[in-house]
Image (cartoon, rainbow, N blue to C red):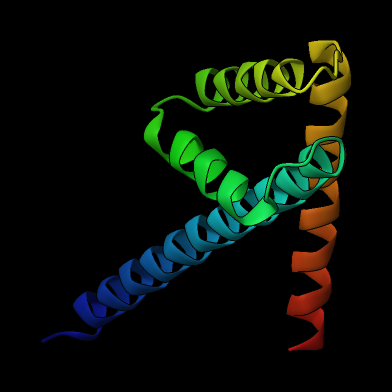
Length: 115
């Protein structure tokens, strides 16, 4: 094998590893965001946060597109809260989702720096 081919193979492996690491980081952020969101929603109701988190994760990872997935998740939470007599606009729930996503990203960054 020539040096040129070895260099291309090494670059390809590096690109693949970077892609995998980015995907894993996004998965972690979404999972952490959903946990925070489930705990927040359950704090407004008498629902068990572990059971509700499982429902949110199933919904989140079952949908195909990012935008559709978030919209469906927000509507699901709003409808669930309405079932408990808690009426919040989608904009407020979306704000919480964005706040929790930012928090999850900060936590991921802090964990990467500590490692």
